[in-house]
Each structure stands twice: as C-alpha cells, then as structure tokens.
Length: 229
Ligand SMILES: [Fe+2]
Image 1: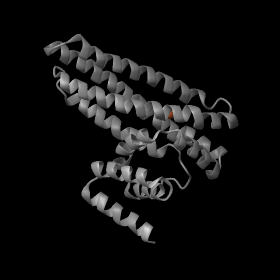
Image 2 (image 1 turned 180 degrees about the vertical axis):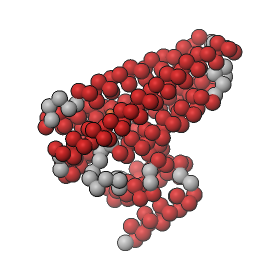
Image 3 (image 1 turned 135 degrees about the vertical axis):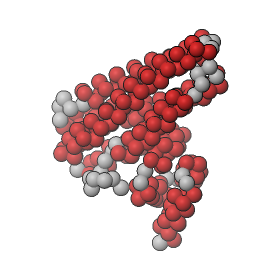
C-alpha cells in the first residue's frame, strides 16, 4: 500500500535503499579502520548494498525509463545520467576499501583512509537520497500522467521477473523492516498468494531475522487469516 492511491514502482525499493544506506553509513562511521576484520565486514556489507543499487538502477534503465521515454521523449536522460554518476562513485568507494585492505595501512594512516572513505560514502548516501526524491516527485508524477495503473503493473511484472530469487531475498532483508505494517502485509500477502511456497517460506525466514517479535506476530496472524479466509 502506498501513501498515494496510484500504483508506484519505486516506493518499495526506495524504502529499502534508504534503510541500507543509513545502516551502511552508521557502520562506516563507527568501525576501527585499523582492524582488518572490521574493514572486511564493511566491504562485505558495501558489496551487498552495491549489488542492490546496481540491480535497482538496471530495473529503471531497462524497463521503467524506456517505457517513459517512449511516451515522453527526453524524460529519461536525467535519471540515466544520475545512475551513471552514482555508479562511478560507488566503484571508486569500493576501490578505496580495497586499498585500505591491500595496502596494509595501520594506525593513524588507516584511520585517515577510513575517514576519507566515510566522507565519500556520505556523498553517495546524499546523492542517492536526492536522486530518489527527484524520482518520487518528478519521474513518478510523469508516469502517473502517461500510464494507467494496469500499464504500470505490466512494467512492474517485467521488473520482478528480472530479479534473481537470491537477490530478491537480499532486498527483503532491507525492505521489510523499512515498511509500514500495512505495506508489509500487502507485499507478503502478494507473495503468499503468487510465489512458489518454498520461496515464500524463505522470505518469511528473512522476515524473522529482521522484524521485531510483535511485528512478526501481527503479520503471521494476518497472513494465516488470509489463508483461512
Ligand atoms: Fe533511479
């Protein structure tokens, strides 16, 4: 369920992105960069998040923006350019992390390299926040002007089918805790009704790891009521 009565293809992933960027920022600001283990853990998180960011940009570049461009010529260029710029920044940040690990930097030098990474990550974080808000207040509004909800659901289907199951599970880890209860119920209810049972169970395992006990109890009660009903 979106705040708007119209279908949105970006609200759900954007909530997940805002969640993981905040977590990543906290982690990058609070670790000891002279600990190889801590930097390796940060790199692991950065790569996981990076994969989702790339997948999301690809979904927009391959399905959403071409559909919009076909009806509103010139509308896709700005978002595509943003995606490219943010991707380059992401690559350079990964190179910075690899440098910290590979150079064997220690002590004060490691802390300085770590702080430079932290500032760069802040630039990536800010860039994505601004970009997502532009998409939600600009690109999304154009979609609503030129597409029916049914047409947007067709594009949504293309996007969903393009995402590998393991990548979808990683998305769930960040999306589910970022959603309002009713949105979460709608998403999981849809999966319960339409996805293969083993996959739905895997998603519920992810939910158990990221939601609080009251959130989970409420959800399970509602989902079993749907089945029973
Ligand atoms: Fe985008």
